[in-house]
Image 1 (cartoon, rainbow, N blue to C red):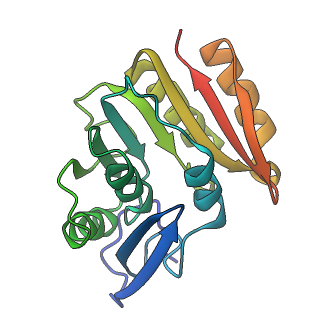
Image 2: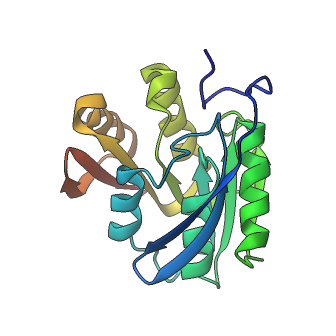
Image 3: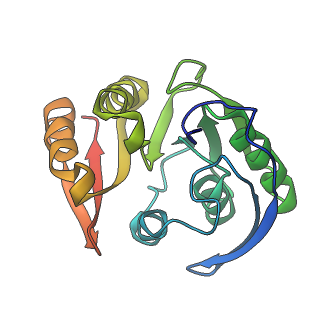
Length: 198
């Protein structure tokens, strides 16, 4: 069995198109087998997109674990003055993200394969993630630690996570790392967490 959070070229391709609208942003996205939430926008991702605000001073945004790119493309279209970097370990997801950036006429974004922050060479003012829960708590917490290291001072981290999949322990981990963390939204079991690097 294959998982979306690993790189597996053996999964046969079956591309299709999703037409999505979040807030007032329309997106046309190619999706495929072997990527996270291929059948439609994950509910948690929608809650995240609807509740987060990017500070005017922020210049660089990292979407860690970008899948086929809905977060990156939404942010790039919503904030044309920012530069968005999409990273995912899954090569197919990155190929789709690049295709989707072109499809949506997004020029202020780029996508690159990376396991967590291994291939990241830019520091961010904002890191956004719908973390790969099925990759295990150790991987998710490593993502948080590397996000903290990567962020510029004053930078912020947004996380969406289901309560039953570890939101309370993620909250505690982020409090420990950042010194504080807040839950800015709770909807249908999903928590949106926000932490700032002081």
